[in-house]
Image (tube, rainbow, N blue to C red; front, side):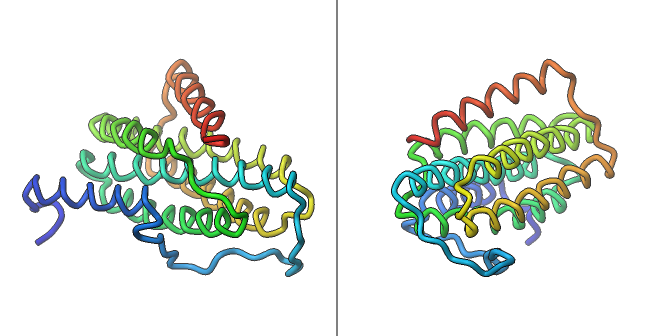
Length: 215
């Protein structure tokens, strides 16, 4: 039975299952379809405690961002009439990012943010609303989201400890693919949201990054 013709209850159960898999890696470790990016120089460095905590905080924020991305794409796919396949394909690629961040957090002796269930719920709702918008605005919402994610990733590349090659390789690959997602949304006819809405999105993103780094 195709997803389009599944009973609403079945679809709701499926979404709940996906949310649990995203939010509780201890119960179900996220598996990446692709190998984790590695540093081009192949170097492995030992970080001191301060550097390790800094990297862990930044990677925790990146992990929360990928949790939000999963929720945004899946929420929008649930209500979008014509973009479901493309949205779910993007969510699948984003799940690799989620797995890479989880793995790196474990290597840094850290864990995902306790606030992720809140971010997932809010992001899923925002995505569902975007799915009801005209297609051009819905795609523009994706492009604007990816634009903000890219801003945060570039900032993190500047703030990472110089010797944290492992985290840097992951963030660089994520940055490349987030830019591709945003460009693809615009190429399919997306129009960026009005400036006030983009400003509101930026405020929400700033709140998420400021809290997820520590909690």
